Length: 164
Image (tube, rainbow, N blue to C red; front, top):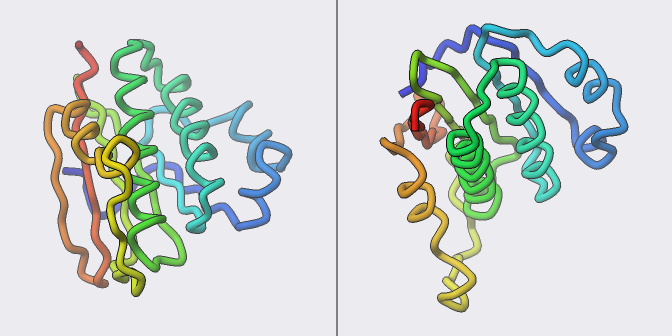
């Protein structure tokens, strides 16, 4: 599980930055000079377009952290994508926060929502198209869990091996 007091680089993107990504000042600065040796935290609005932006942020962070193993990189990108998508689709949160932290031989991934349950019930669609996200996340991570935050939000976390 990741710490609740986040000591790393904290990035907050507006809806306009998400829509214009990567043609923003934030994208250019991060591509050239990501703070290394620290965890990353990025808060984004709950827009579908935020998911690929978060994947790009995760790739950049892993590049600067020297995480080169394809298995770990693919697993981390899948986990962050699925957890961010679930928070967007299944909550009425206004923003969600993704976090990444390297801890020895482990990569820790978190996604925190605001804990607002969706007022619209979500029904599983075609079994071949929907409902497999958390199963895929569980298969990609060595550990997976959730916790309630004091402000009512929920955090989903996964631990991914960097050694294979």
